[in-house]
Image (tube, rainbow, N blue to C red):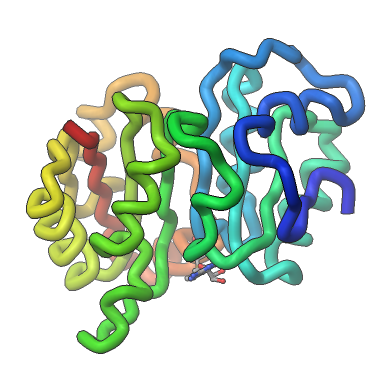
Length: 215
Ligand SMILES: C[S@@+](CC[C@H](N)C(=O)[O-])C[C@H]1O[C@@H](n2cnc3c(N)ncnc32)[C@H](O)[C@@H]1O
């Protein structure tokens, strides 16, 4: 698939150039914001954001190629060239990005991994936070959306314990009360719905959102 990179070599520090070098970049400027969606699944959130914010670069990362194929097909059909997909295990994320290369990370509906023995597999755990800190800009931030209240509470606690400043912490983020309080970026970003999220919303399950920033 065009715009899908599987376990690529020599990409760290070069993502803006790599993405821009493909057909007709909308804007080849290399300084623009780069956002990563981790555990992107079908990648439809990455595609939706790339469409809304064509002045930034968007990468969805996941190990499941068959899922990201869907997003890659939509990218291709829409002719979007400010986004792409990285197929890898997220445990290896530091091999693919240079220190300070990423401005924002979104973790969308990660597997809750409820067993204590699997804590290190949770994408919002301290083990992963250390990896994220290494690739984010010093003022970079992390966002997480989940339907799972236990994972949400675990995440807020773990991020605070690891020294992140919690800028937003919203239970039931799609409730009319919270929708009315969104700033313009949140309005756009939170209204792009992932594949799992749409399943939960059909069941009327509340969605929770947290944003943290390394201090
Ligand atoms: C519950 S799905 C959510 C998919 C998508 N974000 C959504 O909301 O529709 C979680 C995704 O995280 C991916 N994932 C979980 N742990 C991973 C890891 N260590 N490395 C790469 N992908 C991982 C899975 O392959 C899966 O596609």
